[in-house]
Amino acid sequence: MISREAALTILAESGCSEKVIAHCIAVSDLALEIAAGIKSRGKDVDLSLVEIGALLHDLGRSQSHGIDHAILGAELARSYGLEPEIQEIIKRHIGAGISRDEAKNMHLPDDDYIPVTLEQKIVAHADNLLVGTERISIDRRIRKMEKKELSRESIDRVKVLAEEIDIMLGKG
Image (cartoon, rainbow, N blue to C red; front, side):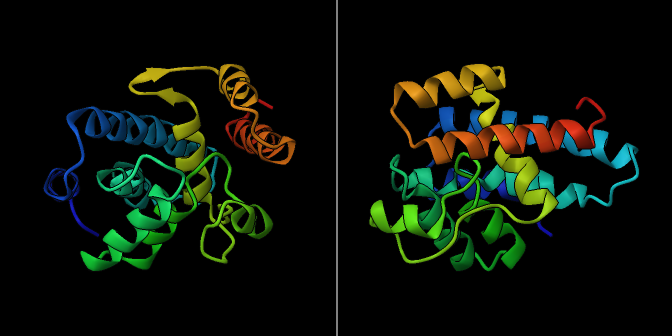
């Protein structure tokens, strides 16, 4: 696994703005807090995978600010020779993922983009709780999604993911 410094270098070298990098650091910090809370309750969580995956989750924003940034980021991660686990976190971090059918409708490559592993879920959830570097509630995230008129399926997945994480943290 690469270091935090190496991940930050990759973000800068790939052309991510300072704003995107600040967001990635904030997501990584929050994801680590969530992961540590879950780990303290006896769940097996790879903290360094969460940290580096969260730092690099928006790597694709160096090329696009569209929904395709996740796919572009995973491809960039592959080109840097990063672990498949990091590539998958990047690919699956949007909202609470994108189903194969939704991906088709969005003209994305035919694939399933829903987070599966605990580390993927933690990074996606942490990303949902931030706007830039500002922490927000899950309710505010859902209101933002509704304003963008995102699918009910997509919004419900974000709610379910938040509930799942809360249960693991002993809050649900």
